[in-house]
Image (cartoon, rainbow, N blue to C red; front, side, top):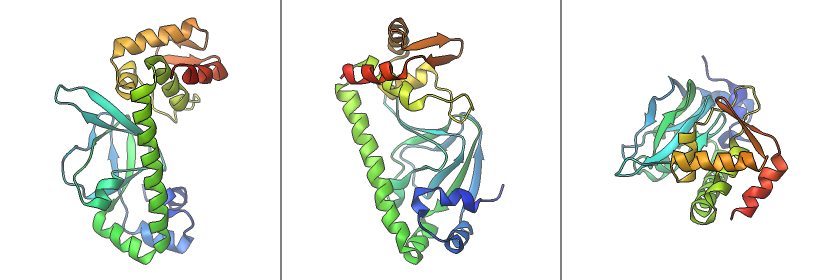
Length: 223
């Protein structure tokens, strides 16, 4: 599948660029496809490529010495990952794994440097992207430090609920535990508690939000 200019228009890095500029950038972008469970990046290895998610989703995570996983972010179409290491020259700060079939667009560091030189607007867009990522990580630290587990689980449900079209990856209870900084059993008890409150309904292989406003209230209450 060829890199689509229409897709590039939706990527924050290239916001405001002309069609001609996007066509020139398209020439240095390569495509990479993965299946569920395949690793894109491994924490600590040299960083060479900035990735954009074209379709599917990947999880960005760190693993402790004991093997415990902490998911830092789930990256979806139009979003990027491995940004910081590409710009500061350091190693991959986290591992990245496909959550299902994924199509990625990659830009090598050397090509990105040329893009930044030839298209100054991209440099301005970079600051906005990195600021958004810093804000996300700040919110994650706040949640893990101060928010009760039930509140964390409720927030995850609100932020990652699908619409039935399959556009979002299905999160397992283990995924939710890795996002909430806890274990699967605690997530299970939290989901049961939310069901007893009448804000969700647990069905086979899916969770249905039955009262979105009440779920939002619980996010605020469990802080």
